[in-house]
Image (cartoon, rainbow, N blue to C red):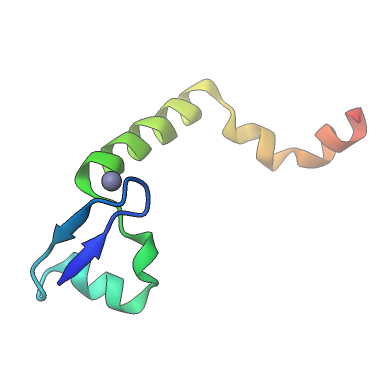
Amino acid sequence: MRVQCALCDKIDNIPDFSTTAKKLRNKPIRTYLCDECNTRITENTEARIATGRFKLYRSSHTTEDQF
Ligand SMILES: [Zn+2]
């Protein structure tokens, strides 16, 4: 099964019977990320959690008051 990475447009060939292939059949194909981008996204997400930026989204009403 040929899949295209949503971020870098790299074409990967994954086994039809793999877990990833099964997941992609249930979801739009654009959600596929190659290993490289997947690692990058995971690192970015963890960095964001580490800096506490995710907390801003939860207290959005407080942010609105400031504007
Ligand atoms: Zn990629």
